[in-house]
Length: 307
Image (tube, rainbow, N blue to C red; front, side, top):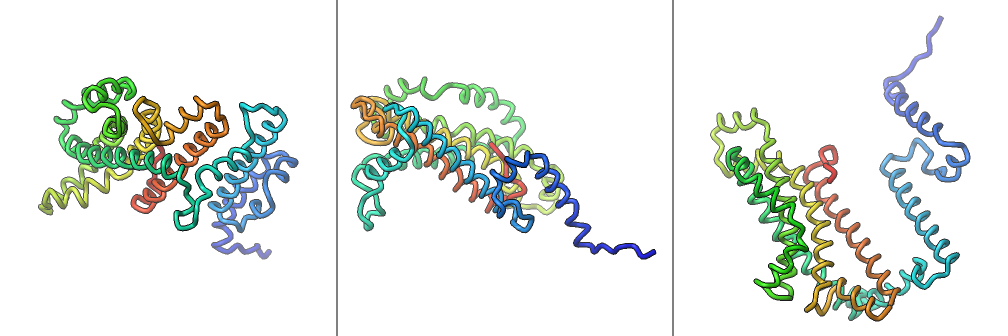
């Protein structure tokens, strides 16, 4: 009897199709046909496209639920997202085109906060990577410094605000210093761990090839530690955003998103409070997405780490 022939491409694709069909069949029919649009269910659609569409669908579903719940409740303390977005647009993003649609309030509130966070995060990244590589290259130095690093990382940064105020007084230097102290430890410790995890065989090959210290750093240590470095950078970015807001809640601050929060709270301007909170969430998401894009560009999607 003649056996049916299967090509190599069909045999390669069949396990993926069976897996997709199995996952698809696990959902109840009503949920499967309601939640998953036909375009997403097609096997011809690439997986990244399906995942992106599902993420945006979940986000839209969440916002719709929030809108419905706020409208049904009718509380002034829980405004619907449509009103929050409209208020944020009028407050910050309704300026002229030549100013990139930024209003005077946006220039006074958003840009100073981003400047402080960028300065603190940049200094923490440079210092953390440099010290992390210096500590991680020597096992003895790492063993001696590790207790100090763990102790310093465990100290809550808000607890050190009185110390920073004594030395730097209220103002931008104190705010940047608090951000740097909070953000430097994840980068430093992750970089040191990444430098220590360098393959010993590659180290021996570098010694045989008589590479200079600069060449070892460029071609051996940095590529090996890069995934851990980006894991630390992502943690530091989140901490920088948190400490940026906290530092602007202190007395002596005259601008920034944190100042806008406290000022709106004192005036019982709840729409501005919700708009500032939503803006902080959007900024955190956009900054993390941008850092992930840089990580995938430099490290590769297969070695990207989650923090």
